[in-house]
Image (cartoon, rainbow, N blue to C red; front, side, top):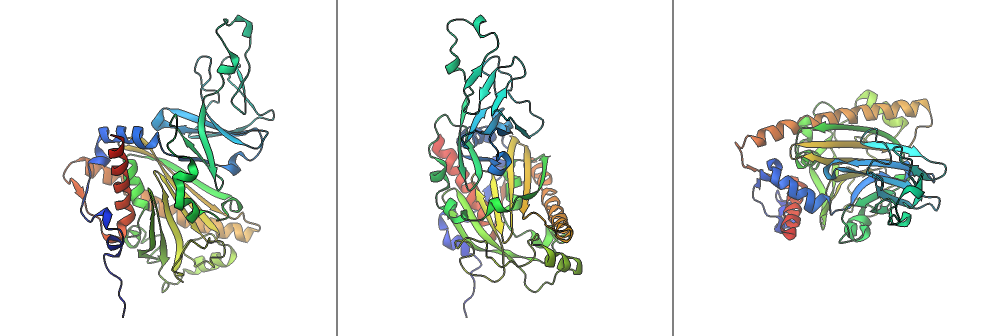
Length: 401
């Protein structure tokens, strides 16, 4: 009889080691500052969905507090999505006034106007109009004073930016085999969304780690999803700095009566087995009948999960060495009937509660780590995604020095 090794992932990926992980990177201000410069300001970062800026002239402003800036993502009349820093070339005011972490708008003429002095920019970033332009001096060149572009590329409807003056890789090369693995899913067909965000008093990696394993499901999620998921992962694969795996169901647990009714009306819950007809062939390569969803991480801060009829993301935006903006977004097919709407609301209520259960541990973890009483954390084999994350960060930091 074949038995599964208790250390199967360490045996598959021996280069990651098996030892404890220092806590210093989670509590050190110096380490945090180097992460910002060497990782976040040089990596491709997911900032928008194409559906959010679907029409020519529509735009989204995404605040990137770690870099003291915000970026404008705008679709031109030619259909192209372009990115720019949200700063006017005149006196440095924000061109679009921000109303939160994400700001949306639409211009029929596909132009942006700074409200301070009325400078007007086109969707290609060019400076179109300067009120009282004749009063500026001969050294002023309109053609040289457009918006400052941000490197912007799109994969599967996900809009990414890179803040580096010259990125080391294009987005396709950065995602590599991970992009192929997670590509082909009908993300754009599932646009009915539930969105949450909050600021947490913890390091961004602590927030990331809380979602990147299934070891905690029997304890933290005993209320929302009691005994629903297996604590073991399936089909762990590492793609350069990125990582992915399957999370599986406990097939012996029956749904509650209300959940069973909801599942008959709409596919909105991860706790019900899906047919898998939407999933790319790269997903669930073992063909497991208990497969629930794919849990993947696109380096550095995007968790992307897909299941039959469902996809969702977590993002962890660093604000300080001890502060993180968490954003959770859950996508399903839009309801067509009141019964489907009720079923989706029921599913999302459980999911929201589970996310609240996850986030309640993070601040306590950071506060305890900051005490210095423990200088290392210990990881078991099924926490391989976390081990890989620290391994990649260390690699990137060392390579930049």
